[in-house]
Length: 121
Image (cartoon, rainbow, N blue to C red; front, side):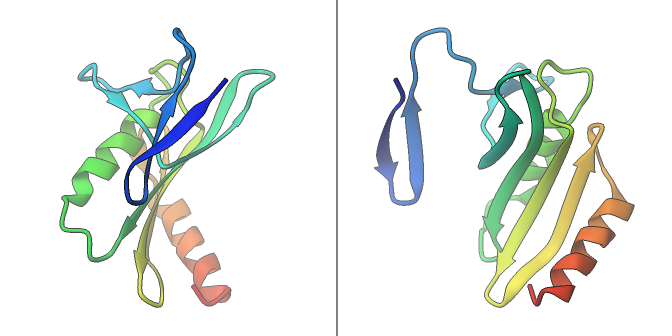
C-alpha cells in the first residue's frame, strides 16, 4: 500500500511500507529523491531520473546537478542509466542537461536540446 499526502503545494510525500526502497544514496550518505523515475519493476532496473525546475527557482541549480551525478553513478547501488535536468522557462525548456555514468554528457545534452527545439519547446 502506498499512501500519498500533500504537505506543501506541489510537493508530494509518500508513505510506503517499512523496508521499502525509494531513494538512491549519494556519496555523502544522504538520500536523494528525483522528481520522476522511469524504471522496470520486474528486473529491477532504474532507467531514467528526471529533475524539473523552474527558471525562476532561486535555489542553486548545483543541488539538482549533484543529485543527477549521484543517481547516474554506476558505482552506486541502483544507479539510473541516464538522468535529465530540465529547467522550465515560460516558453519552453532552457538548457536541458543529460547525465550518464555520473557526469554531464555534452553530446547528449546538445542532442536533447535539438530535439526540444524541433518540437517547439
